Image 1 (cartoon, rainbow, N blue to C red):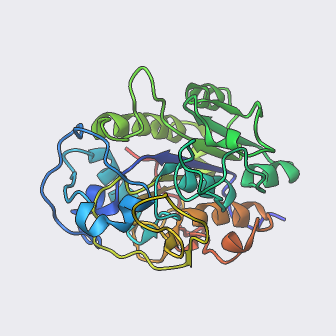
Image 2 (cartoon, rainbow, N blue to C red):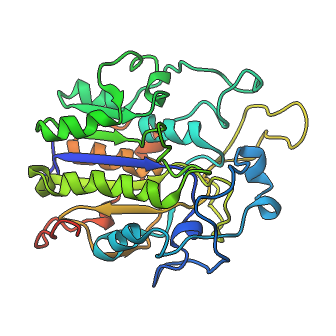
Length: 330
């Protein structure tokens, strides 16, 4: 049964590869540090798999962007909620963290490839939030690039609800916004997901355009929008992620051993919470990617998928459902 709150639609916007300090380290009042300026666009992608994460004390790039580079993200943080204690779920790169945002679980620690025999390959037989929503008679949509992590989950592969990014605008304009949407930026003709070497300013503008369309629609009154970044991308963050659990599988045949190293949590990233019911200011409570899954479960009265989301917080400190609703972002 749905609890008594006005949220009917959740939009999870997942951008890529920037830590909290790299983006919000200079935001007033946040737990951040000031670092030398990063170029936009960044010159190249940086190593950010689990091996690189274990070596981050030496290898992480200590540069950052600021309000000049990403003014709209700073404006959202001023108007709504910025979480400065929000962590990626897995101490590695994209694929495991995307799976956590869909299924609150990941059987892999690095992106899958033919050379990584120490972990399984998709498809993965995992319970998922989309399946849980469908079982409850609710709707979901995944809007992304041609490679879509939803297709790596056995029960979701081939679903008509998996579409390219542009369909989000079409569905929104037609009044068909799902109860929960996962939204990813397109990769062509210009990469707009902020993954180096993509421009952070252009990526931010793509996000702002989507948010603006929602803010100008009938859905603003009942929406919660989360904007976060999938992984650390090889950038420095000064906050040490807490240890939740370790990786029990193997690792590469040479180099650092993975066995019993930190699986969860990964590095801190930004999370912005935009809603008429956002509690304005900086959230200091501990959150992670699975907190967004738990928020959806709490909002729509769904059971947990596994022990990880059962034990997670649900982002509730970021909301005040009794307050006078906030105006849409400007």
